[in-house]
Image (cartoon, rainbow, N blue to C red):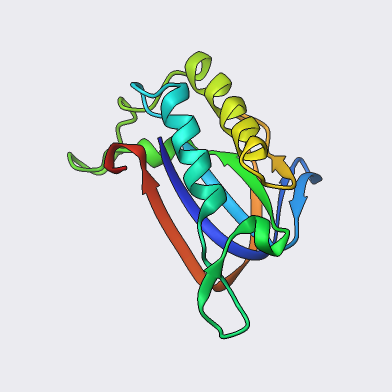
Length: 149
């Protein structure tokens, strides 16, 4: 699994002009599911993200987790994180999991965030054309890949 994590002061996702997910302080997570991923990868990634200490403390040091600051997470499914642009100019998505595999893992990942102490998890709609807006705080942007964890 691959995730792009952005520390945000706010984020929301809209579909056809309707807001379907919205958070204040927390993380916007773009989540890609690879063809070889399973519940193990989803659990490891959720635990890692829930525990990331990237919010600033009273000394302006990145030292606090989502739980410490009462933050939420907005999770957006994003198969394009598995886009391979190494050959030609049109990405190949061969390594991305098929929707029938990716969607249950996306849902499992969201549930695991809650089990790991995240107070609230908002979601987009799997496979939908979404408009995502955010205010990146910092900016702080991290990339995690379970193949490297």
